[in-house]
Image (cartoon, rainbow, N blue to C red):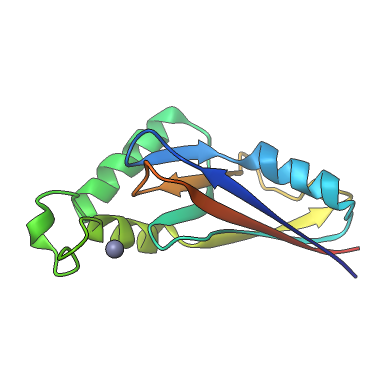
Length: 138
Ligand code: ZN
């Protein structure tokens, strides 16, 4: 069995962002040389997510509105967590959108269902944050 590890880094200009990282994951699979196995992709921060869904701009606006209804950023004072920080909403949004995804690799390709794409969801950006890609297989 082979294993391969790689980190991606992001520094978004906005507090929240949704970034399609499918191309970078495919590139990591190519670099690994692994043809049959699994790829794990996870956010390395507790205020960001990695998730799978459709690459459709309207849906991303819907995520944004839905998450803001569930856990509005402001007023910051509404959250117990916001003493020294102002990112309680980002922790809650990350919890809803998830930490990681695992995708099968078959014949060297992501074994996706229809329209599946991998996204990095940033909820407390404007600083450098990382995503881990770990691939195991042969
Ligand atoms: Zn915090």
